[in-house]
Length: 314
Ligand SMILES: [Zn+2]
Image (tube, rainbow, N blue to C red):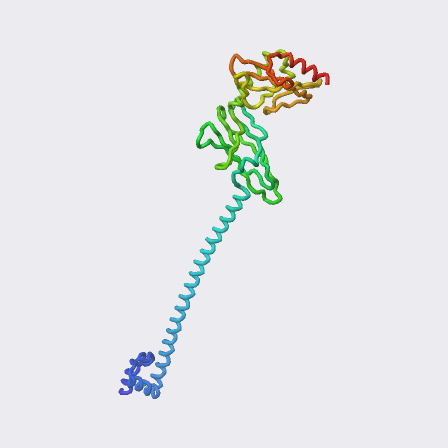
């Protein structure tokens, strides 16, 4: 009984003994008893092992926690790298797009206009031209109303680098609606502008009427064989504003002509005229002939017949 009583007390003390928190006396007592009592020693061994296991599992938990933390950080790192890579990719893509696809406005000095065609019925102006830059292409052409003047339209041509081995697209065409009464500039925003069309000096409806007037007033001209081509700009003669026309006589047996996009085409042969016809914008229209040989404006239309005969002889 006494021994059993001792064993109970010793077993109560075992956890403290294992944790090394007993007094020296208590510790000595337990140690002595364990040396004598096999049963208590067995319990002690089991207890120590289990505590040791608990310690190990605690270590495991710490290790797992650490691993989890590392994994979390790795995930954060992966996401960060992913975001950075995406930003870099978008940056490079937009840079490539800007260089090769979108481009930027071109200075007008690098462009030339091949022709401007005004459509009287639709009021649309078609502007055709090209850029003169090696290894660059036209990426887009836009037109916009001028910020300061509603009667001015700016055409802006964008150019971009041509992808190696791709073909340069150097020509451009843009259609501007409702151009009547307006001026058109080729423009590079905040850099320069170049006038390419002024409806007043290109007012085709009026020019067409003036042309009819010339044919009806000058019997020496034949509407079928003499092509009138309007010269650009308004010229003042004797204080009156007018428009100049040059005359192309068409020779050849099968000569014919027709108007195509404002360009005179023919399968016949042209005789260059050495005079021009001027007609005033004011009604009733005044018609004068400018003779390059004398450098004078005259109202004697017989010069046309004489020059034509001279052209036929050659
Ligand atoms: Zn015992």
